[in-house]
Image 1: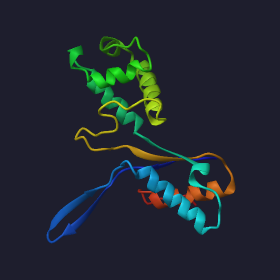
Image 2: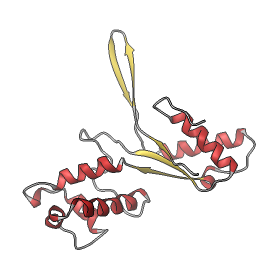
Image 3: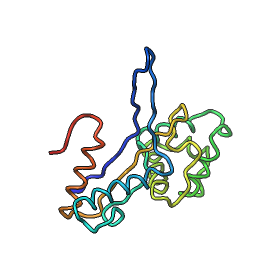
Image 4: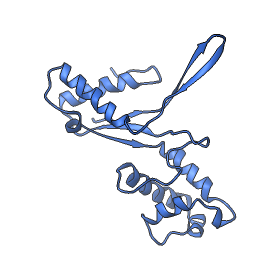
Length: 175
């Protein structure tokens, strides 16, 4: 069974001369490039002629539940004109009849369905993200790097397990 690898941003705290410093780790323009280089290096070390791009899809995504909740909070306002216009423009690419008023009247299940369609198109690169996509309330980038295997061959499965083990943050390992 193919499992995707989600590499979540996190922070590392280090003590420096009686004070604490927090170093924040987040995705950036070169994250995918460096992830591919890591996989290519591992492939080369084991003597494979395969390339990362042949075995995996690399892309960014967000914590869907959190992002949909954030969007919902942004459009759940009494004044429709206060809704972030970049979000409305992005949703119009999914359904050009959507308006701020229609968002406010939409049932939660329908809103979640439409929001997931939007997030799918953003993650696949088919449409440009809205202004606050993947940002925390403090404007901190919270997107995750997704590494998705393209097939179930032995090399890909083993490499997937090893990469997942490298980036596992909760201390558990796949056996």
